[in-house]
Length: 401
Image 1: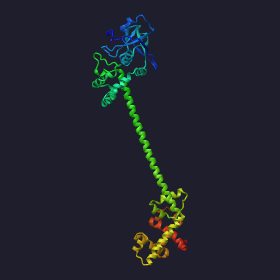
Image 2 (image 1 turned 30 degrees about the horizontal axis):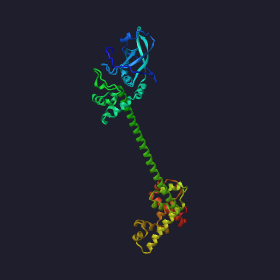
Image 3 (image 1 turned 180 degrees about the vertical axis):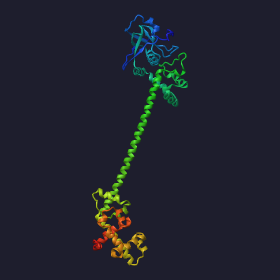
C-alpha cells in the first residue's frame, strides 16, 4: 500500500478536530507499513508519545477501506487491513461532518533495534457506538428496510457467513440511502466484498436482534400457552368442585331424610364408595339409621308383594304395580315367605345364622364366602337377611348348642 499516491484533492483536512478516546478499553495496534516510511518519523526515538491523524484513502486500488496514519502531515503507515474497514467509515463520516480525526500512539523498537509505531484505538464496542452516534447505523437501517422481504431475510441469515455477489449488487443498488458510507470499489477486490463495514456490522446486529425477537416471541407464546392451560385447568377444577359440592349436598339431604345407601345409589347413579366418602367427610362414618331404613324398606316391599299375590295379582301385574321387573317380584315373594317363616328354607336360614358368626366376620368378605362355599352375592344377601330375621325372629339366631 506504500506505493499508492493519493491525488491532492482526495483528502483535504477539515477545519474541526475529533480525538479518538477509548471509553471501554484501549486496542493497541502496530502501525502496518511503518518500515516503508521511516524517513517520516526518523526524528523520534523509542518511547516518544505521538499523535496520528487518521486519513481515509477511498481511492486506494489495493484496499478501498484503507486508513492511513499521518504524523505531522506525512504518511507513516496504515491501520491493519482487518481493522481498517471498521475505522474507515467512522473517519469518513467525521470528515464529511467537518472534523479531522486523531488518535494517540507512541514509538517503540523491536527485534535488533528496529523502530516501529503503535496507535492506540478505542475498542470494538466504542467503534460501534461511534458509528451509531454519527448516524451511520441509521443510514444502514434505511438500506436494510428498502430490501425486499425475502432478500432481507436471506441477507440477514447469511451475513456472518458471507454474501453472494447477487446480494451485494442488491445492497449497492440502495447506496444512495447511505451517502456517508464508503461504497467505493478497489482494484481487484471481489464483488462480494464491495459494501461498507458499517453495513456489515449493522446487518449482524439486526440479525441478532431479529433472532432475539423471535426467541422472545416464542417464549411469550409458550408463556401464554402455559397460562391458557392453567386457566383451563382451573376452570375444569372449578367445574368439578361445583359438581362435587352439588353431589355432596344431595347425599346429605338424602341422608337427613333417612334414605338408605341402596336408595342413594339408585337416585344418584353412583357407587357406594363415593356416597360413603361424602358421609365420612362430614363426620357421618356409620350408617345405622340408613341400614335400618334399608331393612325396613326391603321387608315392606317383600310383604307388599306377598299381599298383592294373596289378593289375586299375578307376578306380572305385581311387577307393573310396584315398578320393578318380573324377576325382582319373584325374589321379593321368596323373601316375604322366608321372613314370615324362616324354616321354609332351612338352607338359607343356616347361611343367615353363619354369615354373622364371629369366626366369619373377622375374615375378609371373599374368604368368608369361600369358607361357607357360597358366592359373594349370596353371603351379602344373607348378611342383609340377618338384620331382618334378628328383628322378626330373634331367638332363631341364638347360638347353636
